[in-house]
Length: 472
Image 1 (cartoon, rainbow, N blue to C red):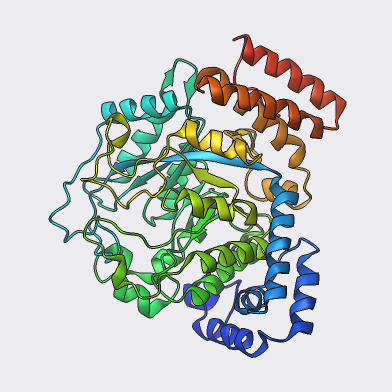
Image 2: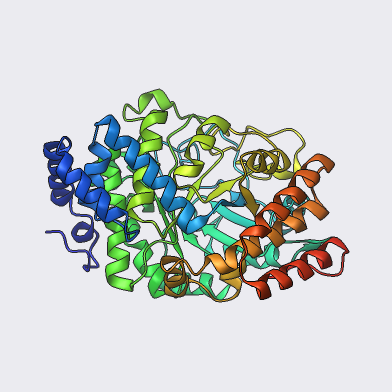
């Protein structure tokens, strides 16, 4: 029986509850009165239950779907404004002992070259990323206790934080590694990580077993309960996600929201981020073999419904998606994107994108500067802000500010200052000119005179080379 407060995976991701929710959605997807009542509740900006959100996802009434998309845009604007946070993945090692059938890193793939970065190679990769302008990384590694033990991950984090190149510095390291123990999560927390990210891949237990036939990841319960252990270990910013296309997307959607409800019920704080990757081509992985792959229209509807259901949670879309696809979902809920990404081990130090160790094909291959220019063309503010994490505004402290929308008082000036850093240190002349105009225009939205005065002073210090890393 569904119990969001239970610490057992099969209780807080209850199969029958998901099936009942999908049945409820099918039976009521034409019930305009009920749909209107759910939309009215959502307009209070306090979120929806997995069952209510499942009904909105199932709705195929064109007029109501237009309302859903409009509301998602309103909520995105209310909580996140026009800011888009940028990050890059850093692949440390593709050694892996799991048998995940959708991933080219799976242990039985003998065609992919295996590579693990040394600390010197990590330093070179980080300098390359800093020279692009990045301040926030998400480190990735396959699961292999011999080649990629927790000690290697911790040493790598320390190396990344230690590198100061010119005006560059990585200020936040998010970590996407396999499920581990409470003790290891404590060690990651002590190392100063930002968000711990772990994709469930699929919440459907039978499908999960088939997709993960061998290796430690095949333990459904241990994997699904990882966020509880991370929270117990002191990591209060965690990131959820499924790989849409592995199983039925409506099932995954309900399970994802139930997981968020569980974290809220047990720890008083939901996920810091939700990622929405789709299955895509890669070495030794044929996307055509996954019959549940979703199209762009469904992808956009999923994004909108997640944004409505959990308005306070950041949403991430990676370079798996094309420029066109990312452009469509940015105003529907996405608050973070990757830019200039390389998904191969050691890829940032290579002039030509290496293909031999990639985890998945990158659809958006533009440079970071091109991505930033593109965002500004659409009136978004590219942000490299890491202030909340470094000021201790994490977990319930961040969520309370986000839910009250008070976080806006920090986010806009912080975004503008980090954008100014990028413009001064890394941007092309054309991007710099565009960015300076954008900063001036968005300063009009800062109504607190004291904040505005401090911002103006800090911007001038950045421009004249008299300081960096200012934050509210």
